[in-house]
Image (cartoon, rainbow over all chains, first blue to last red; front, side):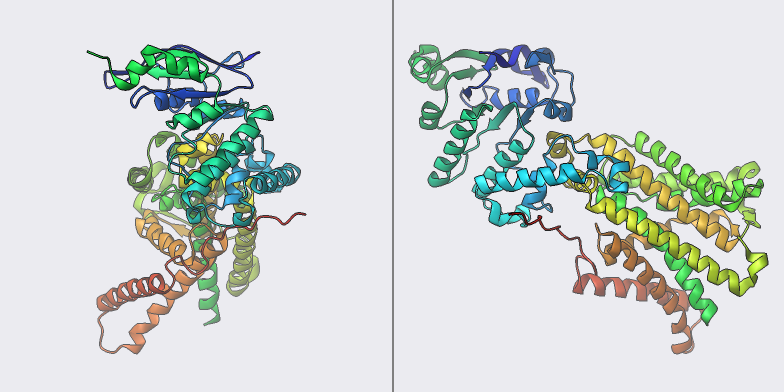
Length: 252
Length: 300
């Protein structure tokens, strides 16, 4: 199996605190990898470094074999790396449909001249069709013209996944896609993730609900104190005493 | 009276261009440009200087466009890391720098005496009345073209990305949008339109001086865009004509209200502008023509 993402020796400090102390991990293409660890382990910071919100102090980040550590975030997206956020974010005055369209990559109509002349309509139609099918799939199609502020918390989470799909991602980084969502919708989102993964999208998700992690993810990577601790199937990871210590503290 | 109406409509068109310029950068990209009067001045002086050296008026207008673009790029590059209030402060400073340069670089701008005899195209051939009509048609035609282009921009993927940047520029980056490129292009186009407005103003008045480019113009345009509807070119345009007509209409209060000194009339006009603004925002907080969400296309 080929490698979707390979992170090695990544460090990052904030105000002298070393939040990432040399992270090494590999995400294999085609997997639905779970990233777990106690609060403060550095999971979200790692996502931020991989997605380009922060630069790593050192280390390398390879996306499908290409070093992306020096890329601006939009270039990482163009290379197929798309992320979502723990607290669903959106553009308050844009509609659901506009959110979906916005995430389409390679839009000629985004060039100033093309926009003034009015070309790029072909790609726009193509993206619109895709946006409608994504919306239908996530059952957001009745909300297309609503501003994103009118959505419920769960719908915002679905839209985050939907617009990420519009970017045709190679690797999807999901930061707690089910956080704060009711149980029925959690099941719905879980089913979507499994289906998307089966269709060939590599997914890495941060999640605190161990039941979900056990059902959805294989393999599971455990982080603690800014490092990767171990990796393996759920049962192997759960049986690891180092993991138990990281979550529960050392026995005295 | 007809001449006065033509004057108001022409001025309305020039303010309309400024409002379209501001609407693109403020309503579109969310960048607060308090230096609008500066770009207006740059365009006016560029065209006056070029045509003063013997070039025909169309070349002057082109020079104003280019000078606007150049000034726009300089300002954007020097404010790359600024947003909101801080960007507003620096752009306000930029407009004052332009005004002070115009005031002090006498070799270029003739200082506080200003540049007189800016060529008014076809004025000798058409006569004053004919010129006023011709110039109104010229300005209105340009307004129409710029409005149509900016409306197209507003509805294009470019405009969509720009609005996303206005709402949350970090998230726009995570959507794969090169934020800097969009901001530079939007600012350059906006500054070019303001520069063009300045050139049209100069050739209409045939005289420009630093006093013509006070920050108050910028404030009036902000008024126009806010009252007309931020984020929608048609709203900005309606707001601009509305502001000009209201400002002109308040001149007549002196005739209605008896026993006022000229200073008091001026103060009363300001008060009326303030009252009208409060009224508009009370009745239509989003402006007369608020921003719309374009509906998704219906497909089977």
